Image 1: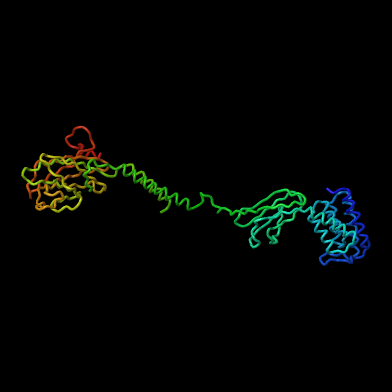
Image 2 (image 1 turned 90 degrees about the vertical axis):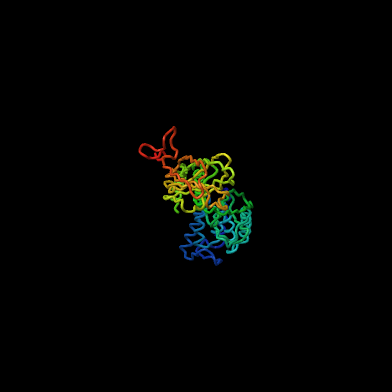
Length: 254
Length: 176
């Protein structure tokens, strides 16, 4: 859980950033990344973004980081303001979503123009978040040409194709499911600590044919043949035994 | 063949296996001594089952090697077996030839002394029957002897002493 210092940091730095970028009014951002969120150039949008930003700060102060994240994210979507993105990254960090926090910091540092002080702080935080990210390396995973389905914590993951496949995960409990047609599903469950590097050998075993022994026609055919043959032999022996045996060795059969 | 048919056949086979399907007629044949001064003769026995037993024809097959006659009368035990139910009601012909070779192919064996027996019926399915046949002396060559035996003379299917082996109604005990 985020500390009081964390809460204050989210608010103070973001406010300073917001002001330093001259966006307290209605001025649009100067620096915009090509992939920046939808831009709100209208005064109404900037006003709404500012209100959302303030609401986010209030939520962060109250340690309501989930709510704060919603507000900051929406504020960034409306304004494209790096201050909002910075607060998104800090809020993600406070929520323990280090993977998303790192990516948010990356986006801030690569797509937006920020002050040197802010850049230095964001870079330090980014590195700290990166160190907290755990990795799960999947060994022996079939090649990317094979029809594989990966699910981590119940959510599908695209297969980028690299082998061994390295999955970045937040610290905590995780579940892995690897599925391939005609193979038994492979599952792994475990808890990853901060920055832990874990490797898992994915062993996919072919599924049985799907028929039990009793459902195999060949088994019944062989059983039937054996029973019939046995019955015929037994019947023949019994028939022979039941027949009258001549008393003499000199026999004429008519 | 369906699975059901196969099972039925198997059960029928097992069921039928419990009952004898054949019939055996045990024959005790008393034969005379080999006449002194005569060459050694062999009793060569042939049997035939037919609705109309004919001794005028040559019988092929179903015969045993001849048994040499002794200086005293001897007895030959042989078993006649009917495996086919269709054979059982038929008459049985028994021909005993006294040949100079054991397979009755020697010189003059075509005119060997011969005793003939016709049995009205001797087989009953699943039953043993018995018959004693006596040849007191060698028949005259070229003039076979013949004896016809009725079905009631064939022993079997009863115990104790009896004049014959048929009931008052005329049925053989083995038919009861």
